[in-house]
Image 1 (cartoon, rainbow, N blue to C red):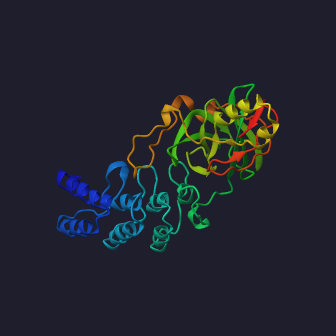
Image 2: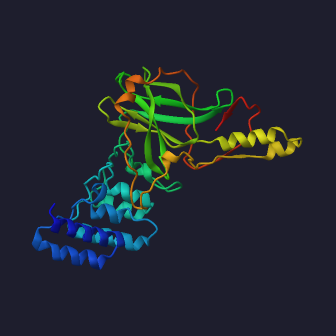
Image 3: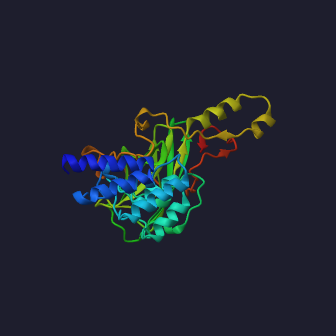
Length: 324
């Protein structure tokens, strides 16, 4: 892209970021004679339509009007940005179901996965109404995860249950990711790989030393993500609360108290400097931490799926193993 085209793209993207419909239309008309590409990519491979569809903290009707105008001018809804987000992904991050429905009617009806395996429905804000039409096919793979704290080991245990085709490859593996700010901003946890055990269903465990909000990825040998778990919270705050209650004399206070899970990730690595409309940056595992170096699977107990929102649980009877 030449300097002139680059300047045009920056001007056009700035208008899309402001959701300035008049400026969007005017810029598109001015650029027609210069063969300007309305789908020109900017930072992180995003087009003007990606930018407008993903604008949050704005008036819903203004966002929808800007997206409609860009589609009318010929912007494509089928392109992906550098992390694999489609326009439908960006729209879902806003929770604007009217915008989502509009894009589906315009041709974005078949959901795809991003580079982490996230379908558009996976990036909806917590508490949003979802639909099966926003999720890509899982090809027979499913993951569920719960978190547990072991006081003896002073570490967190992620209990993972899976379903997979009976003849799945022995190179399929599950990797731990932690979230950044939003539940769809993921970073792969270097070194946390486990090969998927044989069979069509089973359970195993992965240990993680620090608190956080985690998701599991089931990935095939070629790098294709075929399943992703819901987020699970692992927090030491719950354990500290249990320990403080264990020294109280009032049994009624113990029984009525609850543990509130803290979904805040304190690890400095999870801090993001991205603007509001920027999805997370891919952080891929290094060659030195390939799946082949993952520890052998450890048999575990059946797990349950947990919602992404923090919840409350009753204090356990013992501090040896605290279920989160």
